[in-house]
Length: 122
Image (cartoon, rainbow, N blue to C red; front, side):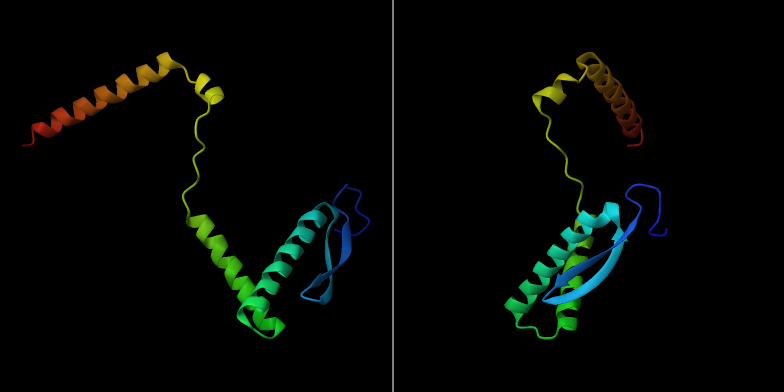
C-alpha cells in the first residue's frame, strides 16, 4: 500500500533504528511500529551478548550467530509440547459432574467390550 492509505494503521512509516551501534532506516506499517521496535531491542541485545561474551568480531558474523541462536530457540519452542494450564477452582466449577460421570461410564463400557474381545483371541 502507499503512504496515503485511508485505512488506519496501514500507512507505511519509515523508522530510524540502531543495532549494535549502526544506524538503519526501515519501513513498516504504522500498526507494526511497536512490534518492530521491540524486535530491534531484542536483536540488539542478542548481538551485544554475542559480541561481549564470545569475542566474535565483525558485525556480519555477530548477526549470523544471533540469527542462528534465535532460529534454534524458535524451532525448539515449536517442537515443545503445548503447555497445559492447570485447572483452577473457577474452571473446575464449570465441569458438569453428571456429564463427566456419564462419559466415564461410556468409556469404561467401551474398554470392557474391547478387552472382552481380546480375551477371546487367547
